[in-house]
Amino acid sequence: MDRFSRICLASIVLLLSVIAFRPVLSPPPVHASPRFTEYDVFVADQTQVDSIAKVLKKGSGAGWEVIGVTSIPDFHNGAGAVLILLAR
Image 1 (cartoon, rainbow, N blue to C red):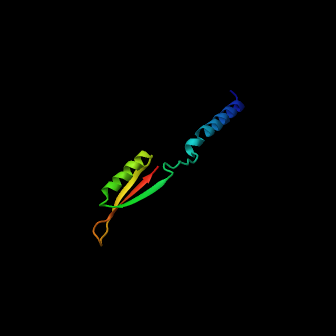
Image 2: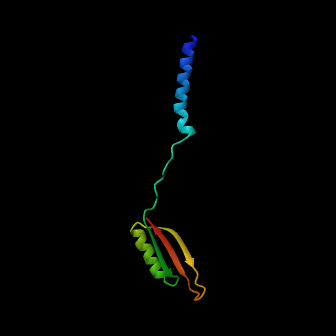
Image 3: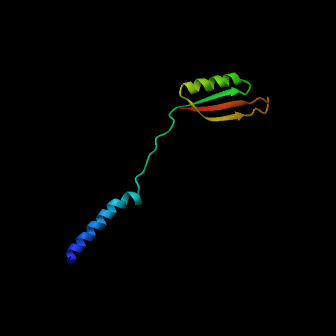
């Protein structure tokens, strides 16, 4: 092969390798969709166990998922409350 053929072949190989490895070296940005679209918060006294159970049963039947439960202490009265975060 002469010099011109080698230069053309090398430039074609170089161009194809740049095109092939561009996504690897600088990938395009990806935007993830949010998992949940709706949120709801339920707060009840810790003594209201029946109402908490009803909310959890009703929410799971309607497609709600519990994503957080925490207790909120009440230092004045001593009872406190329960906060439940639901999402779907």
